[in-house]
Length: 212
Image (tube, rainbow, N blue to C red; front, side, top):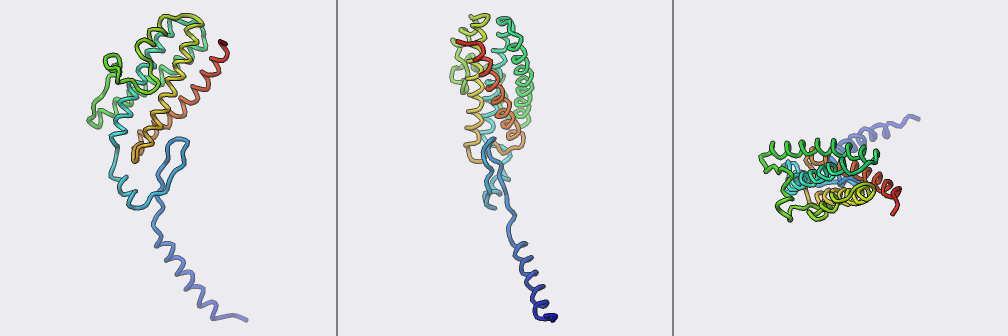
């Protein structure tokens, strides 16, 4: 038998459901650091973030990473005349190309926002400018004094440490509330995380091949 009472109730129930769904606030998700989960924000938290294009931590990260990348280029320059290993030279060339491009990007990002733009050479005059993983002047001299396989071993060990320092800088950036949410910063930090993690794995394998 056709149930008129049921038919009259169903549209009411559907309408109530639709109203309830529409009344729900939109879910706002903040991307996490590379390798970390995203998190759901409250409307108040999302409003706060929408008003922040970049933070002081973002500026310091970019300024510090310029010096960090510059020293990597200095290490690569030493390699050109101190190794006969073709694989080492290919790896060094990849590092040179990527980090030169990234330095230009970081300097442009800072200049566009009216911030101080480091040359990247500040660590030569201010020891306190060393970022995580960077070599001291004495360590750079030790590297410059070696050649052949002895150089290759120390270079790989030093560059692995250098890259690990960059990963620490990314981790420290995302540990600051609200930092790393600028789209350029987030994309760059994610690239650093992915690229330098892969390079650490390659260099670790190369170092193992050289023996003790």
